[in-house]
Length: 599
Image (cartoon, rainbow, N blue to C red):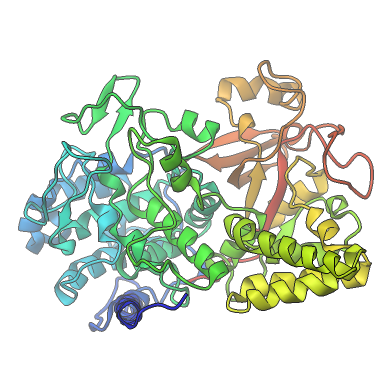
């Protein structure tokens, strides 16, 4: 449908404002050389990007320590942001701010005699803090994602008193408040960005956003300086990278940090003045909900900005549009007491796929070099060539969009083809696919997918239904060669069965025995039911036979035997080229990149 002129002008204004902020980020970091330097104000996008101009993914900085499970909302909530604001003239010398920097070992970044001082991470930290102080005066409209820094879970509110009004937990869920001064949460916003990246604690919590959050974990580990810059750009401009599309407007109004959550261990709600008989909302799978017990339904700050922005732009890239109603968000929120229908609506677009992981890698890991590629057992490709198989993975549309647009059109025009006497699959495809493609001409990604189906159907003389039946890797089939290839890659994302991500006292004995998890641990089946989670392989220690998997803001040490398992059968699984493709391991596939070129 066509948008109204008013909606079009509002969208254009939003995009222009976002570009100004993102340019301001570039400008703010352009002058950073060594100890930092003078930078001139411009619009927000240029301001941030110029502030970080001295940084690139080739030297992404150093992380001070191993991943640390960090309740960022609680730690940043220990700062009284009203007092910090009153002492703004003292800069970083406010005692509570100094304490936080010392805890993260960032006080060295401000010591000219420290060997850490010139590390890109320190350059990035200084630029982020300076840009935050400068941008508040240059941009009174505040950060684009300011609502994600409105958080009521800490000891103190995340805002300067007076910046928020109308907060009321006695009404319907989810609670809302008016953010009268978006710059009143700018301090909390930069605190959240720095802590999330530098503790490597990005946590999807009780959502199905693992395929999006895993890339934040990988970037935080491999290039923390770049992750800080991208986090600042996202916070202020609503864009993940300078060239990325602006997320659709509906998500910017969400306030995930106001949604109350329940901790079973203390039998208490947060905030503690709220109470309810309904259960806390969870929009993730069973493992997400279990791991997220006692945590918020979804994160606030950088982690959820990251996930929501990716979901929004991924779906928009498939549909070639944002929702007609500017206030509608395709990626919803979970909250206490939500109905099953409301839960389904929140989950609707959250989950990703192998194809969307490849797409996100191309956006935020190696957009310049184009090295993002799938690594999986090509026996799964069945009758397709390896090249066609990879093309299909790259081009497969977002799941909901496929089911609601492509599938009905394909069925409709295949029915017409049969009515006209076209009885073979290839004949029907020659009729139906071009018609479906024409119907979706305004959605280029979907149209290109249909073109690819027709091309492969013609070259293989197999009907499109057969081509579509060659699925993404969904059952464990990873090999030792693929594991080694993943370890050698600069960075990665993995598809895994989340059942294996158990406590260390469960995993350690199995590592010592050098046996797979499935078939050797009580309470699970002899083989995986399928991969349902996305993670990051942070470290490979071949000598110790330990492979450290990042997920839910922490790491799990698996053995090679747990990852690749023993050969097994999978009755009812898709056709493969050779027997012995499936195994009792836990990995279905990986996305690899040779560098981080995002900036």
